[in-house]
Length: 89
Image 1 (spheres, rainbow, N blue to C red):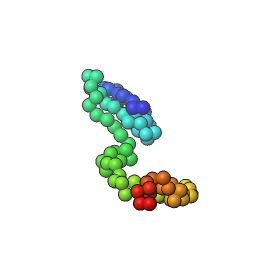
Image 2: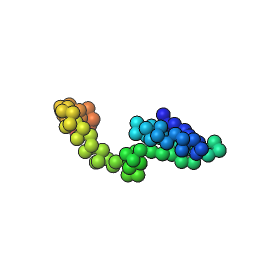
Image 3: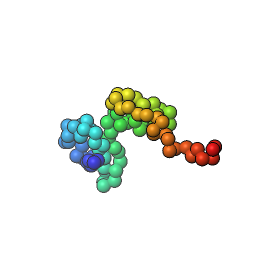
Image 4: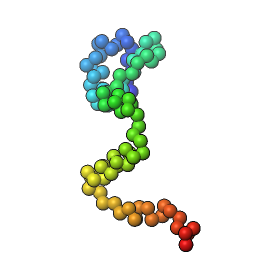
């Protein structure tokens, strides 16, 4: 959940703001009740800057996660009902 601070509150709460950012929170900064800025962690900023991964990058990330977790997957079992083979018979 995003925390919200007015510009006037920021200097007095800087330590708390950085703790929240380190915990993965985003911080909204307001001026006269209107949001004027958002503070994000460097990791979240990089993720947004680079955008979403493409299809093949997502496939590779998925494969890497499967390998790291040691999950056994049988492709024949997974894809057996995906293609309608009745047209070719």
